[in-house]
Length: 54
Image 1 (cartoon, rainbow, N blue to C red):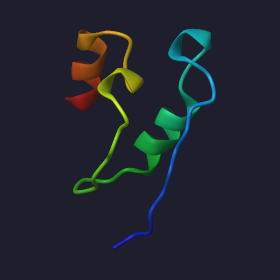
Image 2: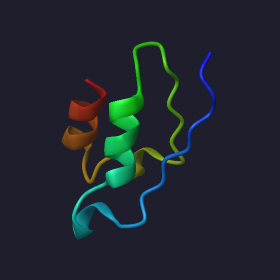
Image 3: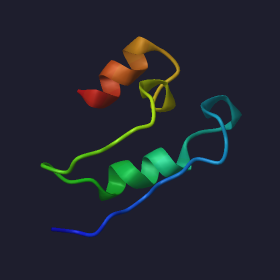
Image 4: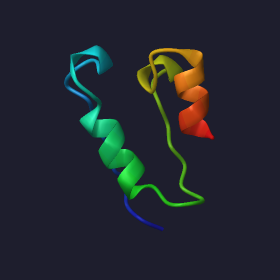
């Protein structure tokens, strides 16, 4: 079991990307559990969130 990692974005998605999300996705492996404060933190709209989850 790997240790706990926390990734935070300092900017909104409209201000040029989500570095924290990109770091999280680069680190995550199959079987990992990802906890988000709210789903709107990972996408600006439903198709974007569904594409990411897929």
